[in-house]
Amino acid sequence: MTRTKPLLVRLAPILLLVAVAILLAACVPAGSAPSGGSGAPSPSHSQAPLTPASPGANPVDLLSWLFNPIFQLLFIGLVFLDQLSGSILIAILLLTVLLRLLVVPLYRRQLTSTRRMQLVQPEVKELQRKYKGDRVKQQAAVSEFYKQRGISQAGGCLPSLLTMGLLIPMYSVFSQGLTNFDPSAMWNVFGIDLFPALTASCASAPTFDAAGHVTNACLHPLAFGINWGIPEPATTGLAIAGFGISILALMSSLVQLIASRMTLPPHDPRTADDQNTKVQRQMAYFLPLISILYGGFLPAGLFLYWIASTIIQIIQQYFVIGWGGMFPLLGWFPEFARNHSPRFPVTIPTPKPPAPGQPPSAASRSKTVDRDLSARSTIRPNRSRSGRRGRRR
Image (cartoon, rainbow, N blue to C red; front, side):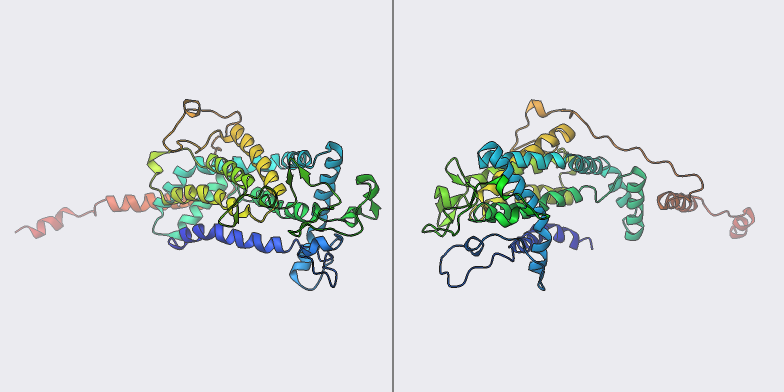
């Protein structure tokens, strides 16, 4: 078990990519099938009006139907902000800020839980060392320790899953909502048609350029010379060896690298050789670099959303956990980061006192047994004086 755990940690990024790919496939609306006889080289969801998905027998249709309400909420919000600001770029940034403000309490809880687990790691490692030969006893003592300190081991994961889950419907909003010539059916909510209030009119049929991209989208996805509904290399033309290079993807990797390093525990030479610490630092470098590979086929708007969201995340991390494990960076440790105290520091929680009448915990029982065994091993057996005399001759 001890050997398989590091292996699972290393395979986690690959498994995450597979899960994201499966979920992205589930975001294709079932009602956007291509019209018959169309030989256009464009994607199928741009050849027909965008309509809500219907539940079907296969899992893809079911997942698409489940994502309908989230897609409509995000899409209508983006269209409203676009009409209000007059720029799709500003609308994406405003929508990102609103979404991050909604999850601020959840993310603060995640940061607090993560930092508390880092602070109590010396005590946890001492428990693991103490019960090294008995895994059942070791797990029971560690779980009891976290329970007494009021630390949830899942508290640092659930908010991240919620934040990552928003990437899937946002991908559909940019890749399908911004590129479709008639998404008006998605603006019908509970029988109320919001189409007249959101836009004037949409085209009756799509037109395409030589690359197969829609040129008469109902919305206006162009801003600063970039079409935010398609991959950035299709607009900028940047490519190396035929592979599209996205400037936004490089910026996204950079800000994610800063955010992930800040969540690491501060540098401690005593734990430099710890296997778990090494794996955490390797993943802090590896996971942000994956975004570069996505730049050639994910919409530019998704990267803009992710960059703005990560910058807000970095600001929140700075106020709660400070610089964390950001430094030293390539041997550089600036003075402003030394002995830095965050605005809202996290402290080690005090142990909860046992409730009246509650039986002793597994950790306290084990301590009593250990003291008993230790005392017995140090006491010499009582030998009578007659026994000694009998052996002397």
